[in-house]
Length: 75
Image (cartoon, rainbow, N blue to C red; front, side):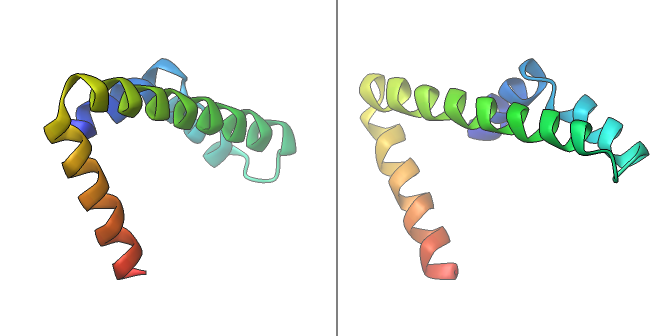
């Protein structure tokens, strides 16, 4: 479910399309900036989604924290 939400958010902010544009010309700083801005907007949207979802579903909050802790341990 979390992957579905992130995929929708990325699509909403145009991340896949901007990534493809950057792949066509990796040296174009404007395309890199556009992609970075889209990723930042997507990250902000996902943070909002996680906060709202944590309020409405305590189980989601536990799973989300567990995933974050696992990632930090893995690093």
